[in-house]
Amino acid sequence: MHTITITIPDDHLVKLQETATRLGISLEELILMGVEEILNQPEQTLQSAVDYVLKKNAELYKRLA
Image 1 (cartoon, rainbow, N blue to C red):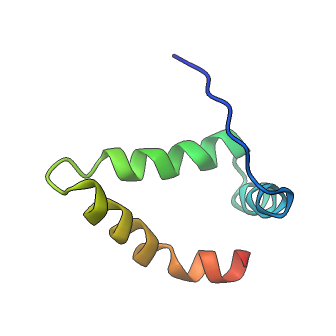
Image 2: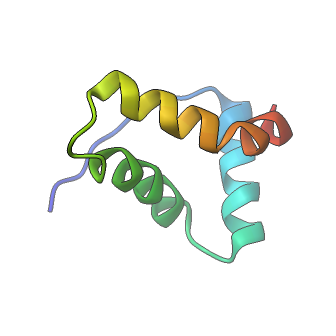
Image 3: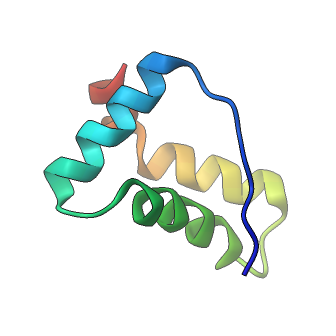
């Protein structure tokens, strides 16, 4: 397994942490769920996968905004 580092705005990090806490999972688990969602779309193009995730999670993103 590898480790990556990303830079995100502080407000995004706070919202991700709040979401993870509300779901009872770690921040790492929440982020991995998003990555796995994209990777588990083998027959779709990357853009189709991105569109799918954005549409599926639109309500969550609105609450996080």
